[in-house]
Amino acid sequence: MKNLFKKGLVVVLPLLATLGVLYWFVSIMLNLLSLIGLESNLITVVFALIIIYVVIVTSGILLHGWIEKLILPIVNRMPVIKNIYNFFNDIVGVAVTDGRFDEVVLVRFAGQKILGFLTNREQGLVFVMTAPNVSSGFVLKVDEWEETDITPEEAMKTILSLGIYNAKDNW
Image (cartoon, rainbow, N blue to C red):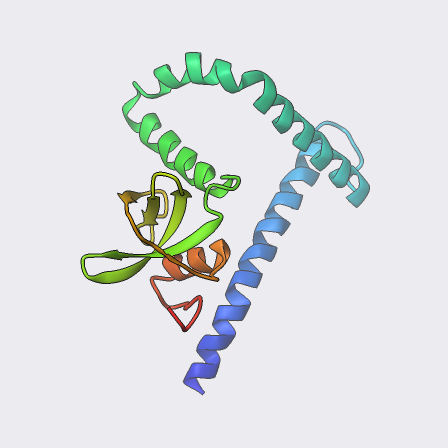
């Protein structure tokens, strides 16, 4: 019975957290829309989300270089702000990497096989994440690695769960 309860928590808690965040976000959108005088309904929220998406993409196109050159040097001089900004910047950077962690491999390190992400095949560079903070880790230059059929998502789950989630039983 105890194991069934734990299994139920594993299924229900992430679902409730996701629904809670979505509810919170939609509530904020509805409140913002009512503040500027727009009727609050689902169509208006969807339209507002599309506008927010376009604004974010446009900001990325227009402001990326400007932010790096002008804003970041200022932010990096502010003690507390620098830490908060860099924390979120690292998390977002890991979350939006396109194709950098496509291949999961096993490498020998300290006599053990460990999961890593092959980042440069020609040079034999493998990024090994530390858990549970995936924005840190280390890069190994290896001569040999073992190919796996583990997907990047499964590897991330294994690392973030501190090994509780086992991607594949055969590694």
